[in-house]
Image (cartoon, rainbow, N blue to C red; front, side, top):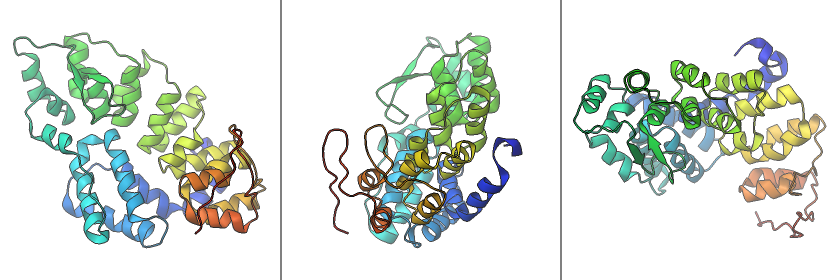
Length: 326
């Protein structure tokens, strides 16, 4: 990411203050290891920075791990290991991904793609009856109600060697989902090829945000003028991209409403100090308090109430806000 992409002073200051949060979640979303010692270091970081600091509950972290798996399923075993450490330390239910574990054990073309095993992949393509249009129906991937083609799976896993075989030997076409998945796979050679045939849309930005790759996010913003979805940033714990959007727009009110999902009161305090209107509403008439309550951001709810946010504000459907007693 080049320096002209963002204002160095404001962004760098906030990035430095909340480095603990950003680095902890980047380690989770960008996980690329199955080594036990490295996983223990990641767990230690999460435990120290997010759980022991009282920022988040162990249950919340376990839920996040479960939600990440469909977007990085090659490392399901690693995520399950982290979930097991959480379960052992805090006595919470483990994550169950039996279908993924079965896929790891099977000698299939899908496993070959997952590991970009060119030799095994070619052996499957040379078998009698090989269908280049074969589709995988699986709950392991995003939007599990859909079926996935071989080339789409190559893009998802960043399997560039297998991808090249499909393109050169079978002339497999690149579709929109190929480009979409390339932002998860992270292979720039695949992404560049996909960009020759497809134009990025807001769903590509969504997947770039989920990938926690700030270079992909700023690339889509600067080259294709795609909006950095603040709600998507917050739901997927991508504070870094959120801060980039704030730095570029300086829209304190719009950012403040979604900011509360992160449940970081000190950052809310910063936005209020910059002039954010505490009773600002979104297109549905919801205030920051409605959103904080819906996402169970308890500390932020307390913060907002202490700063005299309107607790009687009704949303567009006329329903009053119901707040749990903390």
